[in-house]
Image 1 (cartoon, rainbow, N blue to C red):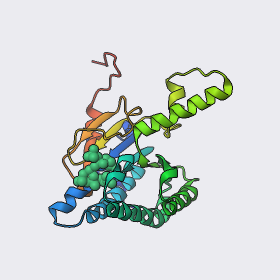
Image 2: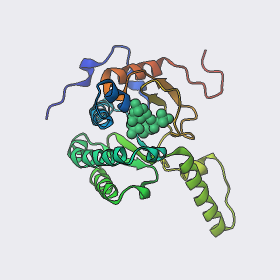
Image 3: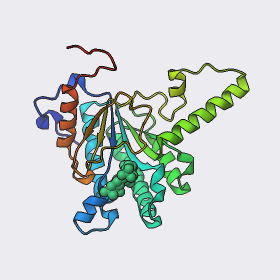
Length: 249
Ligand code: IPE
Ligand code: IPE
Ligand code: MG
């Protein structure tokens, strides 16, 4: 299938040679989107999938190497059973329907979170999607599922302690701790986007986002488009990252 060259819609100020290597998104506001339309919350989640498709496709076309999407947090189990059930159903639907499209776009699916605690049927579909996209070499699409940054750190520390018990000793430094996180092998996010205006991280990538540039928009996730993504990248490219130093100016 012929795809439109991405340059057609590119705002002039976007520098393709200075794209963020890793974009992470807290996709928030599905419930509010539905509420405004007097629809059930699940309608908002369903509409959110369209936004996911557009953002994934845009990142793949631009050549962004890593995109992480916060899809279900470990704290989201606090929601009503019916919403969780519908969300898991939507996730399964996405995983099954999307494999072909992901392969066509050369996208590799990865996952971070306490995956083993997901319902068995979800786990099966997830494993299948991971296996079927394993050989792709384009965009790495990382889904954060049953993810919590504190749980991730607890899991890492538990494993490090277990290894120390086996080996008698272990040298702990930042690279070692990083290598025990679910994100082991992935670069830290450069640009962290949150939709729907909330100014918090909600337990997302607390370690990895240490020097991420934050970008918050009032736009609700189902309304988030390619244009918003371009805007976030253009803003990112205008920022000066200092990492505690004095910067260039
Ligand atoms: C984000 O939208 C999706 C998930 C957390 C699964 P919300 O469901 O949190 O929507 P709001 O924040 O209630 O509007
Ligand atoms: C963060 O959104 C989690 C996801 C987007 C999956 P929440 O809606 O769960 O966050 P809070 O409750 O507003 O902090
Ligand atoms: Mg929310």
